[in-house]
Length: 298
Ligand SMILES: [Zn+2]
Image (tube, rainbow, N blue to C red):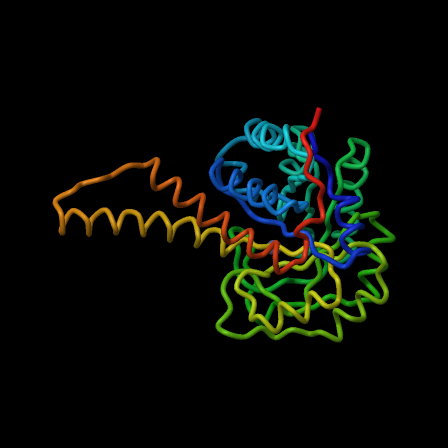
């Protein structure tokens, strides 16, 4: 069993100069695809669950699934609640077995964000769970988080350092111009800001909105050595696009050969393959391939 919290995983990543990918899942197929990709690449990995996914699937099943998938591998695997905005949900995740939670108090005034985050850090650390905070407003749209262009607030590097000192968070998500959802070909990345954040903050830094980032921006961000980068939107697209392509090909085959195959297991297999390929490609880009030694637990 190598189901662990994110603490050492993220500290090691920064120290050794690679990034741990955090991938959002929506069900068992997508979770299995992420974990299998990490195992095959011998990479540490973080599985992310949104509040929406948890409310849909329930608190009990998700930790059971990740513990089952971690049970016979030695790669470090963590599971984090992504963008926890509801204190009850965050505490329940800690109680039910998530190894890490994100407290997103970024929509609140600074002092309130500090207060909520500090309360969760205390609760989580007593139970061996790590906490990611957020400071600034990351733009774009992802499930219940929706920040329009004029509401984006980039992270103040000095405040980031202070926020960590006041709250005790293990890692911090910062707003540097990346956004949730799709890019229209460009990202207004503020690299000097990220450079300053990295200079002042010795704890792990997290970048959200990394799906679909223009390659040059992705490379630039990686050169500053954040510890964790989040991929969500692209997983959703890989999921639904592969499902759709199976259904489309099934219809086309029927038209051509009168063969009507409508087999859910084949569709699920294509979904899994497609997500796995995507995750493997990010593991390669992030340089985390080969950073975990695989051996049978026991
Ligand atoms: Zn995010």
